[in-house]
Image (cartoon, rainbow, N blue to C red; front, side, top):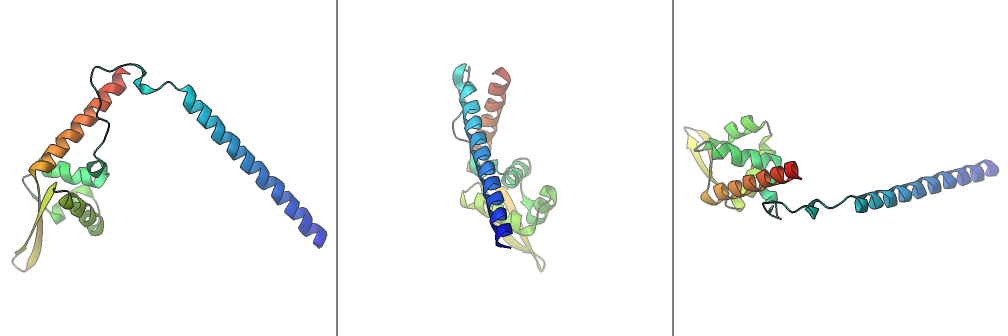
Length: 146
């Protein structure tokens, strides 16, 4: 039984060593491949692409909220939830992030006995969306030209 256990340990050690050295070789090869690719900035573009993407708006649900509010005067929580096909918790977390950044304003009221949460896009939120869209358009143009 001890011989079998020792043989199994040796086999596992060889297998592990082979896998780890193969993984290391793969990492080195990928690094060499990345260095071989010419940088995208090698050909100067007519337009400069802004360096920083607004990560707050770039997230899918937040971009959906801001975009929906850009074309509607205001939307209720349930309208946004149905439009974006998301959960209550997911929508409330993302809406709160946008509210903390002053991109949206949240108004809570009652419609009879039912609570009603309504969102509107602020001026700074509209400007942030415009900057984001301009950045994305510049990236698309640079990609097509490049």
